[in-house]
Image (tube, rainbow, N blue to C red):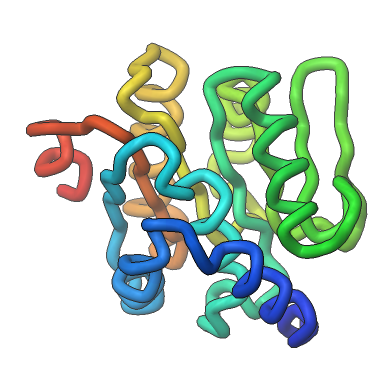
Length: 187
């Protein structure tokens, strides 16, 4: 599949210009391009949730240009809907176009959707039915400091899938406060 239109890049650049996380987006996308998992720790309001998934999509990296979906894990339904809405707005689109969401009892995705924001239950069920995550190029674990059994299990299953089935699967863990956990996640 072709990479997203240049107009999306222009809209993203304009919408994210003042976000503090912009300073490290290239470092994170470079690590992912090289096939390394990434951990991003930044304070609340820095733009992690909305800027990084779009930067990954628009990076021009091969893994993001092959038509796979970037799945973003949010701990709550409201956060998933809000993140998808904000990202779609940053691109000047409606939810369900380039960016969509899937939560319990509600889905706003289409064949064009490349960034899909999901809740823990949705990702957990997907991993159980498809451990290789067919059609997914990356999984982003947002708000990981809000530790839960579902998120920890999903990260463990994604890491195992990466090790055994999908060495090309990109993994990112994001948090406002990881502390010493950051060293262990990338191992």
